[in-house]
Amino acid sequence: MQTPEQIKDRILAALPGAHLEVIPNGSPANQPSLLLDHGQAREIAKFLRDDPELRFDYASNVTGVDWPEKVVKEKVKVRKIIDGVEQEAVELVERKTPGFLEAVYHLYSMALGHGPLIIRLRTGNRTDSVALPSLTPVWRSCEFQEREIFDLFGITFKGHPDLRRILMWDNFADHPMRKDYVPANEQEAKP
Amino acid sequence: MIAPPPELQTPAAGDIAGHDLLEISMGPHHPSTHGVFRMNVVLDGETVVKLTPVFGYLHRNHEKIAEKNSYLASIPYTDRLDYICSMTNNWAYVLSVEKMAGLAVPERAEYIRVIVSELTRLQNHACLAGFLLQDMGALGTPMMYAFREREKILDLFESLSGSRMMCNYMRFSGCRCDLPVGWLEQAVKVAAGFDSFLDHFEALLSENEILRARSQGVGVLPRGLAVNAGVTGPALRASGVNYDIRKVDKYGIYDRFKFRVPLGERGDVFDRYMVRILEMRESLNILDQALRDIPAGAIVDPKVRLRNLRPKPGEAYGRIESPKGELGFYLISDGGPSPYRYRVRPPSLVNLTVLEDMCLGHTIADVVIILGSIDIVLGEVDR
Image (cartoon, rainbow over all chains, first blue to last red; front, side, top):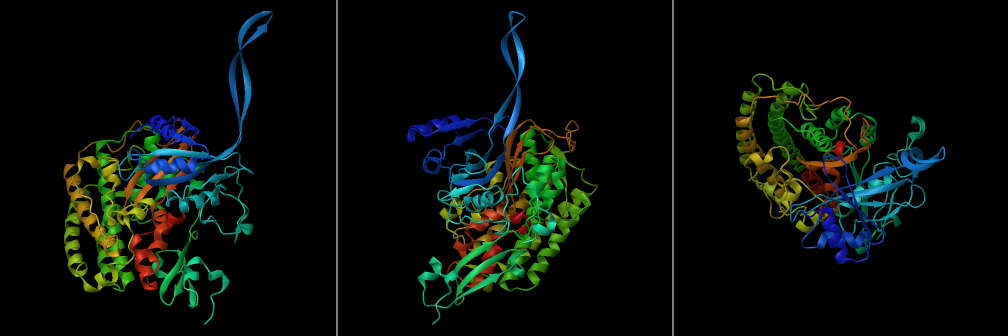
């Protein structure tokens, strides 16, 4: 199979102007992924499915990941003037990374027997900008799995044919797989 | 002529305006739904015009529980996903962790994993064939025959792991304990007996006219739809798609064994039944080779720390060919003692995507056998 970098170049050749980014993966599994922009996500997905050399006809695993806002403390080397002499010093800098929700798709090719290609889509934040384009029109296998993400993570998929809760009951309010979810007490949790 | 109530005026119902439609809630306590599964079926006479599956009765948020547990503590929970096939669930999970942490597995443990997984496949398919015939109205006999054979395999699991169904047997980079004395000889005997059981079962059923009349041409799943809808396992291969993860990924040591991948032609209920019967023959084939070649040696790498495992930050997706289809685990580590994200890719849930497409136009009695031929377990669907 081609590497994600090669696939990225191939997509850019076919769909100029697409925004793509290769996300490295630190584990020995070595499965880097491609981050797609919302705008062309469905065109790129169609291209990945139909391109004769890629033919990712099978979307295997579709899931969500919650990344809450994080404060990372980093040590940064700076040059400072200490006692009148410019010196190198280490400063502790707090950096805030904004939170977002992520949908991850693992694609395989049944026709050519290769994979996985991992594509990711990210929402703007975790509160009011949580819409992503649905890939169910491209791969039917996303139908229930995207419903599950909607149910448990609270990502809304635009263009999904039947976006309802799937595992929790219909008038349940929260999204249990979010990292900051606090379960209601037993009494309230009854449907 | 009574017009259907507004909530039933769906596109499908609109096509046959003027007919009396009946909405039935089938399940969650219906015996043919193999657990707590519910289908809202809209019927025109006896013909299905709309079918909506309803999930969640067995939902316990398995994934959230695992994200609070250590990596090791999740192994027994995976037993409860597809509670008929705990060995393959264990394998899928430990395979993903091994991928993420970069662990190697000793030779003997790989052989044991193949042996117990193929035994699992045998008993799952035997159960499925028994249940399916029960659903078709062959009450009792085929299921009891299948369960008699399954019991012998469960006895093997019990002497190996201490438990018939919740085996909790595999560990990262190996297995929990070595085979008991005489276990291999017993397994050889069970495998030999299974072969003659299959001959018997097939003579009784596969040529049976009633079985053929009930299942041929029913619930056809076209090849293109099967691929696009992510159907995996025997249901996919019955539609003629040659995709077996044991062959494609060659995980474990599956590249060492000679076996064929049975394929169906039409993708109807009969093909799905027959593919499973043929797969059992191939599993016996693999078992013969594995039981013959299994080497002596360690069953777990002594250097691997099972407790307090902390893989490097990163992610991994590992998958295996479970008896029901592609069972995958997607794990993200942030370097801590429990996974940051733990996701089960359940074959049973994804295979249900096409349930409505397969059932439309068939009778309510056929819905039961179409569902039976997909082979679902609700512990895995609802998680």
